[in-house]
Image (tube, rainbow, N blue to C red):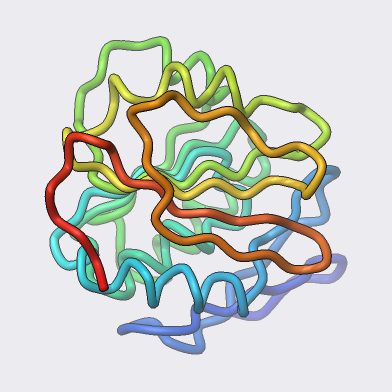
Length: 194
């Protein structure tokens, strides 16, 4: 998939769509997760990805949700407020032939979370625009949409670590010059990863 003038690209780095390039629109606040961070995250998640139902809030480029499906997740729901980004996601999903596995919801994440849960997701990615400061609101509303043994990935700037309810236990974390990223597991869960 070639980028149009004024677009950037991110690359799916593993699985069946490995090395597929996704176009990234130039939208204020959009900051796709780097290849290095995604590689680390998906190495952590690989044992639980097969068959997982994935929620990618603030989907943006779709890199996290699409990477998950590429690596074996059963499905992904990409929630994106920006109409242009949502349209671009649908176009790219069509080119991948993934319409049966990946759905795009053009909606504000907090409004989407306020609806009754239609699906309980096994893995959730939360990486909102940093300037919006939405972590605490999102993390309070998210559990109603997650399975009892869910995994939660959170990306935030170094100086704005979000507060997580006590039901979440840290599993792994890392950082780059720009961000701190962490993977959590619900406290009720019994399965552990190496």
